[in-house]
Length: 307
Ligand SMILES: Nc1nc2c(c(=O)[nH]1)N[C@H]1C(S)=C(S)[C@@H](COP(=O)(O)O)O[C@H]1N2
Ligand SMILES: [Mo]
Image (cartoon, rainbow, N blue to C red):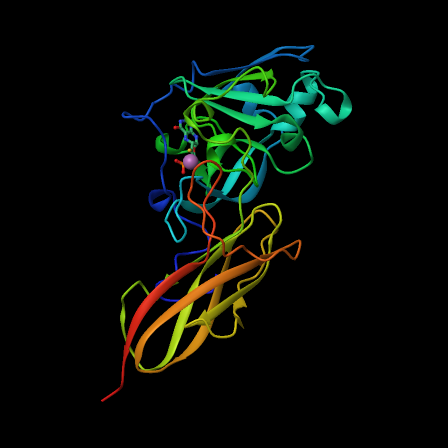
């Protein structure tokens, strides 16, 4: 954690973690009667699990940054947490599921929550070795009700609406051709890997600053590809390399900071990231629909001379 004033912590406390869902009233699922059913195409051994059975399985802890497809460039719908859970791919394999690359008939895993929400995830992605979890814990505590108690999905690299079903109750194997999940029926893309993004958290837009050294800092994410470099520029000048926080693997955001010798006047700060494959974050602006916003985050500030 770079601990720069104005920059959020590397791990987002659950109470500060963004919440995006359609639930007017947060479901309060009873842990004793909760069940998960796994069934559908290519499931040779359908599974029904209760919470005790799920918790008796090997648990892993993995840090994953969750982002919402409806996040505008520079927006707040991103958070990073330490998730504790069961590896979903193991459970699917025990149920007889094979990914499409191994001849499995289903390419879509449809998760359904107790309140009827549906989210469709590529089976191939869930089974490709990444830490796709049925999560029961968040930052060392049971999942809060608002974040999916008792069990939610977390799949590194995919936007929440295609991966992160809260209050999970059912997993059904089907195809993308045969079924559109809730948001897909409302003009969002069937498949939505996370796009590389970076954000300036400090200084805030239209901040009034004093000339001299100013810490410009924020976060950058490209889940499951990782962040290799972050660059900042002032008033459209040359890109300058920021200092990065330590890498916690490819599934989390990275904090960054760059020291600016601010001079008097009105200035525009911009940021862009380079992901783990070497691809530079695009500056082409796109809106959030259908599969995530792009563009560089820009912040305008006013700097006054000392004295
Ligand atoms: N049951 C249910 N799960 C859901 C949703 C929802 O509306 N209902 N929203 C999804 C979306 S769009 C996102 S971005 C993430 C947000 O998870 P969070 O609220 O824990 O941050 O949850 C996903 N899981
Ligand atoms: Mo979302």
